[in-house]
Length: 112
Length: 116
Image (cartoon, rainbow over all chains, first blue to last red; front, side, top):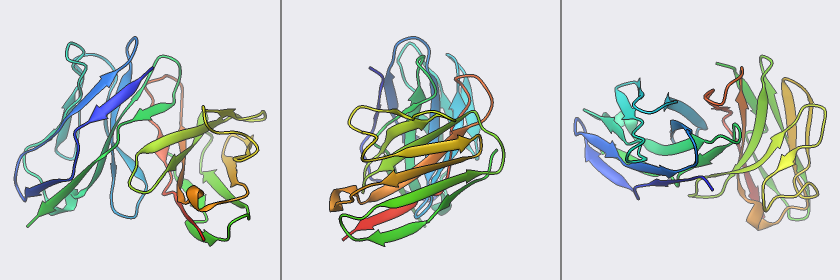
């Protein structure tokens, strides 16, 4: 079945550091890929998405490229801010429908 | 995107009781889902709420424990029945607007449930 694997957290970075959160997936066919962010005490917000190979999703300075050859969708940001501190979830929706398979989440803490 | 309101936002309940969580959307949506997020964990899909018919449950979740209603295209409820401390979680409603598998899901803020 479909699955998503994310790098283990927590990740602690200094402000303005470069961020990479690794995400790889297993799926049949051509899934759509998503990154969601959960700020403390809040629900999930869609951060970005990509629906086909080589698509790049981007939002708020975050980027992720759908790499079918490596089955990856790594999240990157060139310069993180304290306000980026949150839990980040990689997710996919497969050919069978809209339901999402989530990774375990990666907690990010950015310090001043 | 659709504005999703979940009620209650949090509750503390006694074991053996039941609680119904409401999810209201400000526009008609194609799909509605219910997820559970156990403490420090990722999200697990409970079921797809089908308008006018029985929900479609994922493996490990049953209707007797998590009855779901969806009377129209903007509203759904999830009941957590006969609660035990293991049911302490965040329960989230999500929706998809429009057609196409590439449409993202949008989530409500969740209901934080604690069982004593």
